[in-house]
Amino acid sequence: MINKRHLYITLLIFVFIGCKKDDYETVNRSFGKGYLHGKLGSYNIYKIEEIIYDDFFNTIDTQRYQIKELNESYFLDNLNRNSMRIERYKLNSKLQWDILNVYYSTEDNYSAERIEENKRLIKLSFPFTVDAIWNTNQNNSDNPITVFYDFINEPYQIDTFQFDSAIAVRNEYINTPIRQRQYYEVYVKNIGLVYKNFISIDKNAGRQRGSKIKQQLITYVR
Image: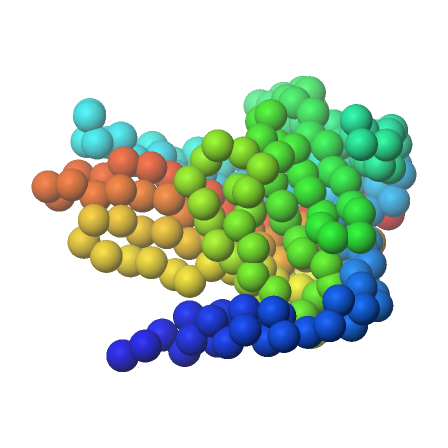
């Protein structure tokens, strides 16, 4: 059976080719800005559960911790785009925040990007449309992850938080005898990421290698 989404993608390609150039250029591609991070000085605190599968030692290691992301300052990147420096802190056993690393985020009229662990990731594609499909790893050397919008500008609730408008990005979930893959992120305007579930596991002879990471917003200040 032909996958309906794959068929839809093929049809979109033909539609795109048939569109006039001026029709494409008049699209408001900036629609959707403001979802990647909050304003300067705001911060988010997340609880994170990270599960590491080691096929060599055949072990499963679970870690739970909290991360704070602070929107520290604006700067111009090497393409002269307005960008945000995001300082990340990890809560230690004394309930103090230790600096962990620094990420960067940038929005232009085509996409919203984050640089994480020196990898440039395309988190969002503009404008928000149900037919948007992109590779989040397009600008780095990692294996492609093809994602699309699960929902756009819909109410979203997570624990005690109730948001009027959120968007979700996901991949086609994969769970076979040899691999499991899931990419799911939810963003709220002027706050940023509020939920993430990422799974990348390879299976071989009853053993597993890879990780599962679940990240959930527990506090935000804006």
